[in-house]
Amino acid sequence: DAGVIQSPRHEVTEMGQEVTLRCKPISGHDYLFWYRQTMMRGLELLIYFNNNVPIDDSGMPEDRFSAKMPNASFSTLKIQPSEPRDSAVYFCASSFQGLIAKNIQYFGAGTRLSVL
Amino acid sequence: GENVEQHPSTLSVQEGDSAVIKCTYSDSASNYFPWYKQELGKGPQLIIDIRSNVGEKKDQRIAVTLNKTAKHFSLHITETQPEDSAVYFCAASNTGRRALTFGSGTRLQVQP
Image (cartoon, rainbow over all chains, first blue to last red; front, top):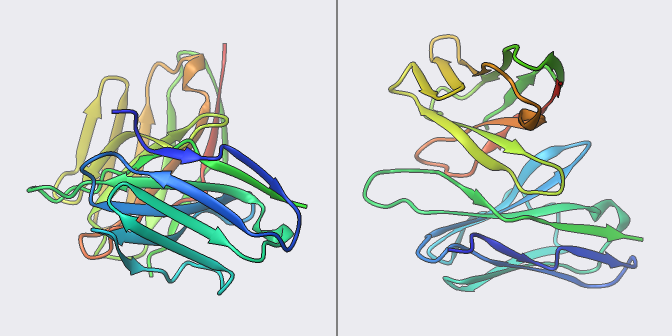
């Protein structure tokens, strides 16, 4: 398997523009997580899905952020409008619960977002 | 919610020496404790994990210990090599809330 695939790897945009980050989880995984990494706040959860249903979005900063998972193989994180403080590396991760409860999360390479 | 504290923030060792990174957690319901290694420009990669029904786990040069009573767990790397240089994160989660709460990270530098 190619692992968790994120696109784009880098995104530079201007304040006020809409940004869409994309994630393809590992095939067969039933959990998908979006994390954000900054120097100030470290790695923090934004939202996670189970079987395409959002379970916990308490980490989503504000209404400017939204996430969707239309099917088991694709998720998006959208920021509209973007602000300079949204500049960070955004990671997508996926995991599979299976018959034995496991929470091994596999991370993508991340999208580095710069909002000017 | 869960809070994970990690120390030290930076650690420099000589090649061949051991390195120890320590974490504490606050939520007694946490039962899964993974350690991730993050290299520059890459996503975190799981290197070892431990569950609350186990006190110690070892995988070659890497070991993790867990003290549930004190709510702390540690990563031990023996015979360090330059390729061990990276940022290491501890994390915690529980069966009910599967998202990971991460520590703040430790930048390990192994001097050749």
